[in-house]
Image 1 (cartoon, rainbow, N blue to C red):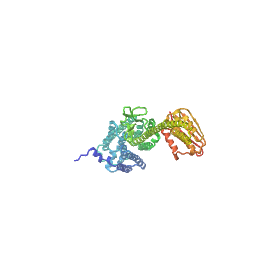
Image 2: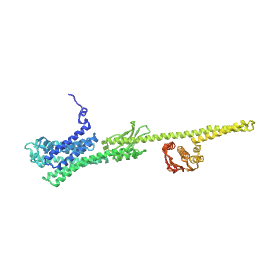
Image 3: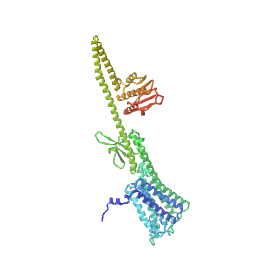
Image 4: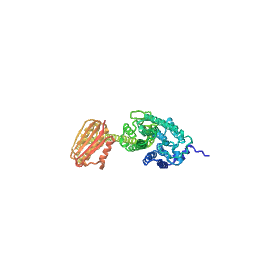
Length: 594
């Protein structure tokens, strides 16, 4: 005989079937059980309202369980709720005239209560968490299996018509009934109900214990369990009332039954409400990156994640390298965050390198889709922030290198080519003095022509050096450089610049911003006058250029303002342009200088 191991058995078990097939089987079982139970209930004297209430409760469990099973197939809560919906109708089978079906209904009448206890004790993850929980679940099923069998073996519906919620005087026959044992029914039934009362009390203690130990997120998840406890107690109280007040009927009994049914419908609806809340939290994840912002801080990210996950105890640890070349996860307070255990969910980059870890309530581990969505959004936000930071640093290095090269070229031109031309002019003047009395006029004219050419070359070279990087900006600062720029402008320019020195890159950026705006005012805006201001506001240097031209400047239609905005952004600055048609143009550059 070929032995099938556990792994192979699982392969051919129900758990290996497609989810759609399992859901179809669950729905079929609930539909069949509800139909059979309703027919039997009607035969036992159930009214149309009774049958509708009964179907509402059973199918509410089954429907909610199917939705939970579909949305979270790895969680056992969905199948348990479907089982609760199916077993809800088993007791109704006592209303049939088929002996075998009557025996199933009489024996397993309280099976749905054991399933409910199982559901309450394992909600929301569908798994047992302690030995005591497992023992209590086994005791519940054992009571139904053993106690229910003993009760059915002594139960004669003709002699104890009030022993069940059905009017079963004419039900049966009971094939499990042992001749001569009907006299033992009352003590066995009393012990059976007493066992159910003990289980209910232990169940309440277990849930209270879990509630006290749970965090806020876990308590929100356990709330439907409290509703289920209330339902179980309502059932026990109802049974006690029926036991102590035989023949109770009328409005009071109907009202208690109605409230019990409504309370039981609330359990699957509460579960669905929790499921929908989790789905809404997943929907919020889509806007997480936008809400955190383009430059997220650890504190900001932690607050947004805590709200989305509904866990106020959440800690966010970001990966950092220490001086020894190793690394670890550190929160915004500088404390280490562990990356192991049921509370930890790691987030790695697309390259597999560590990025962050979430230290969250263990209950969130039962919603892996939510954690995966949050992890993906967090990865996107962190990598986006890292890329932006790297891009800024690279661009800033490029701008600084370009400015350094400008200054080097200006120095080289000043100390090299300009100096040589000046020396050549000085030598030419000596030659010019020596040929002043030369009889050949052509020689004197040639010397004068060469001198004029050298003077023009020197002026052009100085202009070129000034355009590359003005020496006055390096020597004296922004205010004198702007004043010199205004004197050389093609149109009247008024300058109001506060004295002071700034970082060389900031000064260069501010200077060439004014250069570009003055050129635009002269070439495109047809302005008659321009005002330039440069002042410090806290840790920001604000440079404004205002002209009285025709306005209508648009950075999208020209490369000048676009390039200017890129240069200013490279030093973490901001460019603002206000240029209404016919209203002049105001260009404002805000540069960090702290």
